Amino acid sequence: MERSFGVDEAGRGPVLGSLFVACVRADPAVLPAGIDDSKRLSPARRETLADELRADDRIAVATREVTPSTIDAPDTDLNALTIEAAGATIDSVASIGADAKATADGLAGVVDACDTDTERFGRRVHEAATADVEITAEHGADEEHALVGAASVVAKVARDAHIADLADEHGPIGSGYPSDPTTREFLAEYVREHGDLPPFARRSWKTSREALAAAEQSALAEF
Image (cartoon, rainbow, N blue to C red; front, top):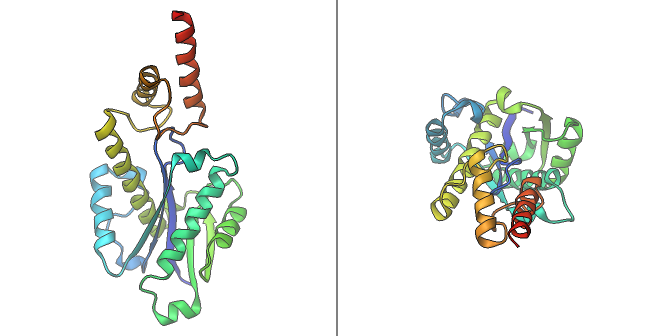
C-alpha cells in the first residue's frame, strides 16, 4: 500500500507542559514545499507550514494532547501514552475525507518510533488504532518521510503554542525542558513562592522532585 499518513510527537522530554501527538494524512505530492523535520525549521516557518497543512482540504490533520497529570499517573508510562495518542490520531484522519478505494484497501503510514524496538512500537500503535491500517515504525522517520515531517511540524507548533499560553499567564518559563536554565529557575522560584509545583509541571520528573527537595532544604536551613 502507498504511504498515506505520518505520525510524530513533540514534548516527550520536558518537565513543563503537555505532550502533543499529530497525524497527517495526504498524498505526499500535495504537501507544502519545504516540509522537513520540525527541528530543522525556524518557529516562523513551522507556523506557516502548519497553517498551510490545516488550510488544505486535501490534507487531514489530527492532534492529541497528553497532559502532565496523565503523564504522572502511576499506572501508565510515556511510551504507552504516546502509542495511545498515536492510535487516536490515526483513527481521526482515517475517517476524514476517506474515499471509497482508500477505505476498501486500507491505509498505510509511518510512525516515528519512540521505542528502541521499532517493530514492537509499530505493532503497539497498530493495536491502538481501530482503523484498518498498515503501520511501519522507524527511528528518525521525520527526516526521511515527508508525511512524518509534516506531523512533526503540526505537533511542534501545537506544543509551542501551549508553552506560549503558559508563559503569558505565568511569565517566562523557558522551553520547559530540564536543560533550560530559564525553566529550572522558574520552577525553583515557583516552588519557593507557592510551596508546591505549578499545575502544569510533570511531578514525576526528576527535575520536579529536585525543585521540591531544594525548597524543603532551604526552608529547613532558614528554620
